[in-house]
Image (tube, rainbow, N blue to C red; front, side, top):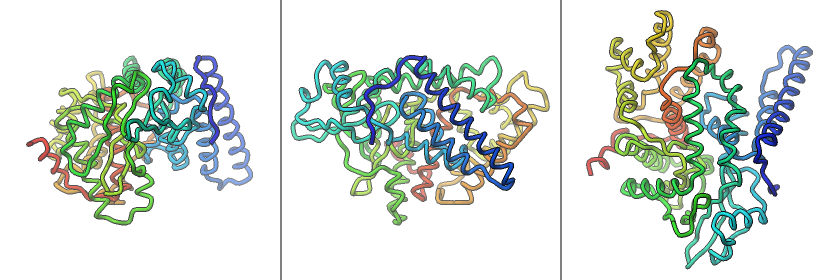
Length: 437
């Protein structure tokens, strides 16, 4: 794979790259509509493939928040066409890495020494490269280590990157109104946290210790003396990425075992720790030779305030969903309904969220749930398609809901998709035994 000797870091360079990408996408649309005049039955598959490839190619050299947003979008398989999901999912662990000379220079500036001065051995070429950093393999005192190095300029470019994409996001998601900035501030805040490896070290040590008793779940050990604000050193964990494992696994028992560990891990964090690993994509989990799940990245941790947690999970209970007065009350608490809404808006959004939550909360309605259920995931995809075509929804202000929805909903979309890939059948209540202990 081609390596990078530099990453554009100033606003003008990064904006120029995005403009070039926009021109390519515009050209794709012109070609599509020209061909459609000749062939009226032409579908959008080829257009989606071309756009996905050009957008990804434009973002992968920028790294940072622009590529991270693409990675986040790839987690929701019902939101984007398949071509985008497949291409953007490469941002999880397959993008052009930094060149070996740039790695040495970066290492020297972050820790004051070259890698060969700190480790017994250090591979100059990265093993994995993602949106914010890349991983190298090293050894020290007989231990195999993974060393994560952050790309230069990533933290400094987050605010300007988001400012560049904000107008497109406002248009795409109908985020109008005076309070729309709260969503962008939430994304900016979490992305800045992900670039602080001192914070990630603390979060990793805390959560791996807090969740150590969950069955079939493993974590690496972290090494503060070999880490800094931009470098993180941990044990090298042997295993294959979850997406690689699910591509060939045919053993339902193993799928159930891994799925149960994943579900218990997330429910324990959500309901007991009130903070949760909010980046559940396949690149952040490995499967070892004994079919244990390994969690290897704690850069994105979302804390769940009590005032959001209580009404959010009350809406997962059928007796609340099916009680019109209580249901509406919770929608107000979560800022989905607002005091300045018209009766028409209240009726519309109450009906929309009743339909949405009745379906999406089904895994919480009983003691067991089968995430291999194609009917369930098909219904979610169909609902997403219906919402995307709803002309009434487009006319209404899309700026709704607490800012905490962004990462909590992202967490559940990602978790559901991982469990679906595993074809896991889980007991939804077993996590409670870890809380009791």
